[in-house]
Length: 437
Image (cartoon, rainbow, N blue to C red; front, side, top):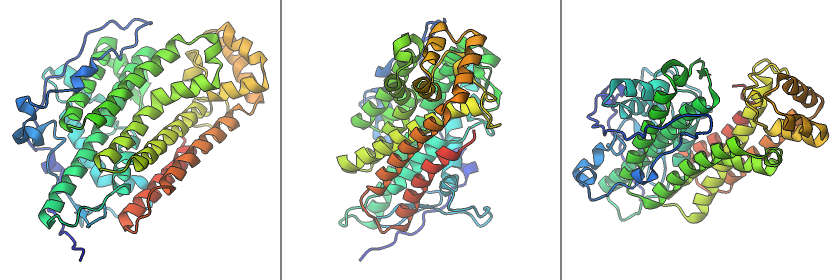
């Protein structure tokens, strides 16, 4: 007989923010940020913290950056099922067909925890590290949403021999560990944004001034390194070497992708294959390997873990392809009225690459250099006459469909929460295609 496990008590966000969370001094390497420097120079060995260290002992396991605390905040477990958000009576009723609303309560608590996790011994460093985790500038929180939905979509039955108390403990511990993956992923993502803004001399990010613009390149680089160090400590607390290896590989991919973009030859810059590989490294690797980590923590089979990876990979590629389109179309939806940040930095993306296939003379324009505004204008003219924008959208749609197919290929489940989360993941593939920012 399958028994329902009673709801655990609700823990408010305000109380969650007051939980004891010891912090660890981040290790950031002071480096130059010249034009030829890729500021992802970071010691990945920091991820592999000795599990025998006193800080890793079981009596401290619940305190490692808050990632392994026992949560009982409105999540309800059904045997063999997933988690449901238990909205309080005063909560606004949200559209449950919205993927983001399905995990809204969880996202709110993760945001609070992330702000606590980046507290630094040096106040200025803490302010810098927290900059993009502040209320109002957290961004779309797209990646944590995907990972929390994936965690429910891959919910596994707990062994029948387990008692209700053991089932509750194991399931809550699993969910906490999966939340930790979402937090780690967001810290890695924000660190990459800080470093990218330094490389691109960006002045704005998420509608506000970029950190490097406000506080300087050196502090922006150090803040990014600090976030990486915190992510690595949290990652080590999971004590899963396969998951550690996956996410350490992500950091390597981010470095590789950025270097490919900075040092590419003219021939490779005009190669779609090279562009897609770089795009995987810079954007899709993080979400694909994080999705796989969610599956591995849940004890899923290699086949299911691969499907989770395929979903993240194709969703990430579709996301970046639409980003490339929006760089030209912007919110006005008219060609050339967007930010044009990529082409102004000499970066060739999918729309231009497709335009080159229709107008080979565009290759010569790109080779002459996009640092010349005349060449940029000419490239935009060719793009406007081509199907480059449309073909980039079509390629994005192809990858979005592949992501949706990966979800459809998961083992069948009758659990309502599992099915709802899988529908939400499929819905996200279409939202990626229709987004305007």
